[in-house]
Length: 91
Picture 1 (cartoon, rainbow, N blue to C red):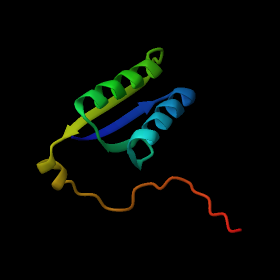
Picture 2: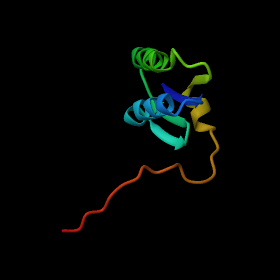
Picture 3: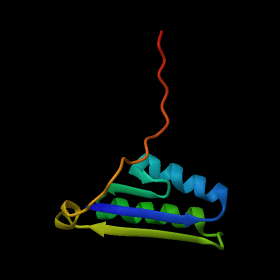
């Protein structure tokens, strides 16, 4: 199933850890918004990992929303998702 995952984390170090975790598993749409396809087991594991990272945070919000295929087909978006920095090496 497709999921929309968002976060609002005040602490830079924790925010970076969550971002790196999500960058490895989902597609970044905005700075703190990701979309990915996950099984039930995978999303449970991802939520547990995010909770472990942020457990000592006083000011953090984690948001994980499942999106059914019908609803996913109705998503409207304008603009381009953020692209990861990349390098081009010409030899």
